Image 1 (cartoon, rainbow, N blue to C red):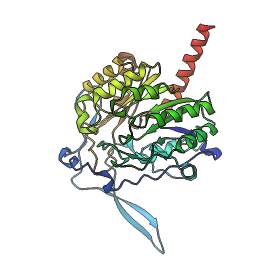
Image 2: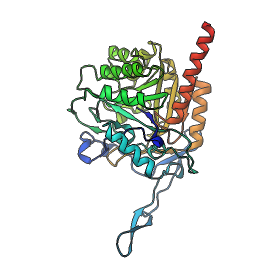
Image 3: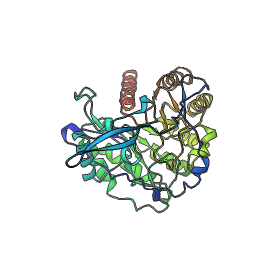
Image 4: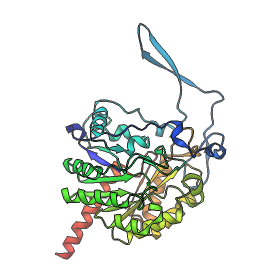
Length: 386
C-alpha cells in the first residue's frame, strides 16, 4: 500500500527494515531446478521476436574508490548486466533518511523496503532530477505485519507459516497517521495471512473505515491479497468504503504455477476481481513481464481482466530480488511497454494503463491519474444529478 508523505515538511513515518536472508526463503528449494540458464533476452516490439543480450565471456569489473584511512581503497565490483533503462541510483540522501526515520517512529512497515522496490529512491524524495522540489514524497505501507504466509517465487517479503500476531493498534495508528498528512489519495496493501480465519479482511476493512471517519474526502485504494478465494471476505473489504480495489494477477495463465504460491491461481484472482467489481468500486490489477510470457499471452490476460470488469492495469519489468528467486528471462524495451499501454487502452479497453520497465502495481504517477479520474467521475455524476 502506498501513502503519500509530506517528507519535505517533516511529516511521515518509516518502515521496519527488510532483511532478506536466505533462511527467510524456505520453500524456494525447487527454484534452482526451474531456472533457465543463459543470457536474458530483450524484446523490442509487439511480437515474439527476441534479441539476445550476449553475456561477456568474463565478468567485467569497474573500480569504485572508498576513503578509508590514509589511502583510498579501490574495490572491484561487477558491472551491472541490466539494460541501461533499468539502472537506478542507490537510495540515499537527506530526504530519504528523514522519511525512513519518520516511518520507523510510527512502526509502519512499507512494501517499498520489504519488496525491494527499485523506485524507493525516487518516491522517498521530493526533488526532481534537476534538484528542484517537484512532488510530494510517497511511501507504501503494509498492514497485517511484514511477514507473509505465502512463498511466491518472485517476492522478497519475509515468509513464515506462523507470523507474529497482528498489532491491534495498527488500525488506529495507521488511520491517524494518514489523516494527519496532507494527502488526498492513499494506497494500503498487506501480506497474505492464511493463518487468520478471514485472511485479514476485517482488519483491512476497519482500517479503511477509520481513515474515512477521520478524513471523509480521502480516496483509498486497497491492494488486497486473495483471501484464499473467500468471496465473503472480498465483499467485506470492497464494501468498507474504499474507492479502488486492487488485486494482482501477477503473470499470464501458463506461468501461474511457476511464479506464484500454489494457493494462488489465475481463475481465483479473476473471480475475486469480479466479486469486487460487483460491489460498485473501481478495480485494478498488475502483470509482471520478463518471466517467459509471450506478447499474445499478455494480450489474452488483458482481455481476461477486462472480461471481469477491471478498470486499471499496470505493467512492469520483473527484476530478480535475490539469487534464490526466479531468473529474469528477458528485458522488454521501453518502446514495447509503450505499445502494450496503447493496446491495453485502445484495444482491450482499460480506463488507464501504466506501463513501463520500472512501473509497479502502486506507482505515484498512476495514483495521480486515478485520483483525478475518480474526482472527474464524481463531478460528472453530480452534474447529471443536478
